[in-house]
Image (cartoon, rainbow, N blue to C red; front, side):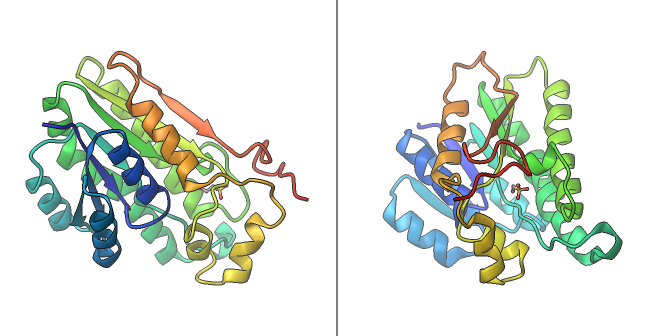
Length: 245
Ligand code: 8X3
């Protein structure tokens, strides 16, 4: 039986690219997300991918995912995102709640549900997709910074608590990645504002670049734990140091 990888938020962006890449690496992939129509297209295209409807904010939905699995060797906690860029002083509590629920509690629910399977596999790998926003803070980052810092912290705690168990905990923290939806969601559907983020940047990362990093981390020998991998485009030396042409 092939090793099984579960990828959350697999209907677009980094999640979709990771599902495709892990399938190409020989995994049976469970692509999980809310938007079933997109998952079904993906599964129809790539035979190694199975679509599962998942809402990481629902415990019932997460439990159903867990019950549908024969095994789980790799879990990629990718579902997440940013909503809004308001200062803390005027940020909307509902936006913060949403970001916390999807990024942090979503990862917690799926991790709790699948951890026994990862341990059972004898060489489990949990990948926490965070962000450079979880390592540094910036004006307007507010709720997203808080959520990504929390996820980053969860990865560290898990690594400590699971030391001695056959599970690796990997954090991947991408910088600027040009995906279909990340900036669009952050700017609440304003495509002009979203496009401005990447304007003139020669080579922001693509979802495939991050999927490549995920694939590398999870295919190292069992004794090698990549604790944290920070991946940025060459044009982004730091959060504020972006080369534009
Ligand atoms: C997204 C990266 O730089 O917009 O996770 O915070 S950044």
